Length: 174
Image (cartoon, rainbow, N blue to C red):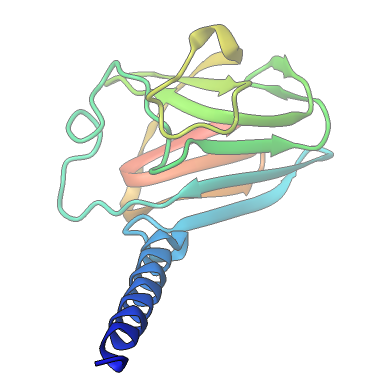
């Protein structure tokens, strides 16, 4: 009988360790349905780093559907997408100091508003505060030549491009 309580404690300890291990595995960002991704490159003389989570289309209508028109979107999944410039740049002709910014967009059927927000570390757009915007500009999306199943960013001349579903959104950076 003396061994019975000891067995219970070992069983409980082993169960807690197993549960903690499973919980940790579920929190691993690489295991999320929208895994983390990074795009890097140069825009003019500035080094650009874009960190985002990459959701999939999965047969859904994305813009004007999953992501409604006229509403602030985190331009990715999970945490807000961030864009880092290692030196001052101009975005769509507007000055932006070096730094890391949350990147949001407001899609519409014809033109999109891009937003660089000073609060870089935030979950989605749930606590988005327009007062923290460092820059807003209007850009024109274009129809993509083919379906992009997973949201992707590329840093390419003359700036960077967001691609997802049947849309490409070029952002000019110098």
